[in-house]
Structure formats: C-alpha cells, structure tokens
Length: 214
Image 1 (tube, rainbow, N blue to C red):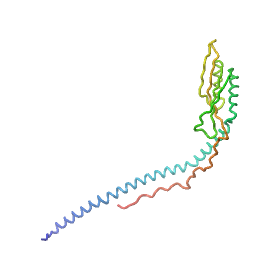
Image 2: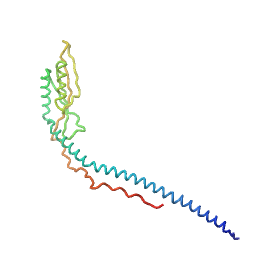
Image 3: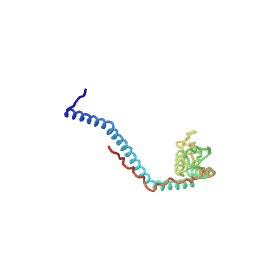
Image 4: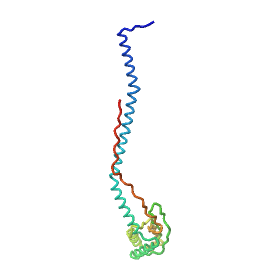
C-alpha cells in the first residue's frame, strides 16, 4: 500500500526535515565550535599577558644587572673593611679606650663564637661579654660611644648591678653583651664565576590570533 503525498504535504515534510537538520547542526557542530573558539581565545589572552610580562622583565634586565654589580662592589668593600678575625682584640682596645675616656673601667671580658647563619662567606661573628664598672653617667657615656664607634659592632644586651649604695651616684657594675663581625679570608667562599642571565635580543612575539570557521 503506497501513500501518495500532495505537494503541500511534501513541502511540510521537507521543511520539517530541514528544521531538524538545522537543529542538529547547531547543537552538534556550531555550539561545539563556539566553545572551542572561546577556549582558544582564553589561551590567547593568557599567552599575550605572559608575553607582556616577559617583555617588561626583559626591559628591566639591564638595570637589574647594574644593581647587582653595584651590590657586589658594596659587599666587597664591606668585607674589606671588616676587622680580621685574628685582630678582633682591636675592638677590645677601642672599648677600653672609650671606657677610660668616659671615666669607667673595663675589668674583664669573655669571648664566644657567634652564629654565622645567613652571612657572607668568611664573615664570623664573635660574641663579647665585657665587664665594666663606673657611675651611671660614665657607663651611659661608654654605651653611647660603643654604639657609635663602628658599624661592625652590635650591642645586644646591657645589664647593671648595684653592689652597695654608698652615695646618690653610686658605682655600678655592668656587663655589655656585644657581637663583633670579623672577616676570615681563609674561610671565604670563592666568588662565583657564573654569568648572569642574558636578555633576549628581541622580546617574544605575541602568538598569532586563533582562527577557525564557524
């Protein structure tokens, strides 16, 4: 049994088939392609942002190299100015002279090795405990002179004791805890001979825009 369609019904059948095919194409092909283009555009934007950062870093490399060279010179000058480890007693002589100038007395001292963590190679901290005596004004003047006598000496702690009050300005006993930074050339690590990173001749080119047909 055959069904004979009129031209009008045949038109609607063909129209429905075209609409169905269009819906399937939009769902399966067009939307998938649009999502792929969106992902590629996101990747392109991220790559362009990365290129901008790299170009900015490349422009800053010459200034950074100059700053590193300047800091290296300053470090070498600092290490050269540090007293030799074997001559740290010169600091004690200076403290003794400052004590005498202030009217105080340096009676004794003790020496221990300090913690050399996070210090340049060859730099050795030495902890000094200096026992002094004098009036409060004398010890205060001595402390001020010790704080300003050298940038290579830190005052860590000051303790004062009053043996016996015999006047309104009694003689005090005190201990100055100091850290003296010295330099030992024998323990200095050799200077690294590695070269600093070179800037690229040209900045990275931006990726080509993602193409594609819909």
